[in-house]
Image (cartoon, rainbow, N blue to C red; front, side):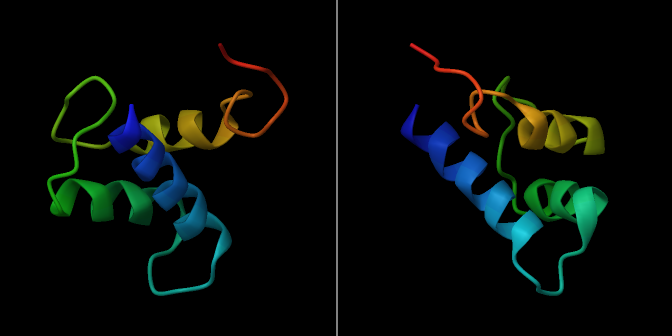
Length: 66
């Protein structure tokens, strides 16, 4: 759970902070290149997984998750 939290924070940071990594495709490539597994344990990040993370209502504060 702690690892998932760290990855989610990293994704939001990369998406909202100006730097050399651009957009959802860039974030997916960055995570894949560094061997960071997805929530389901895949070694390859697809842009759709990054997009779903960024749109997750629990992560953006629109829903309370227990």
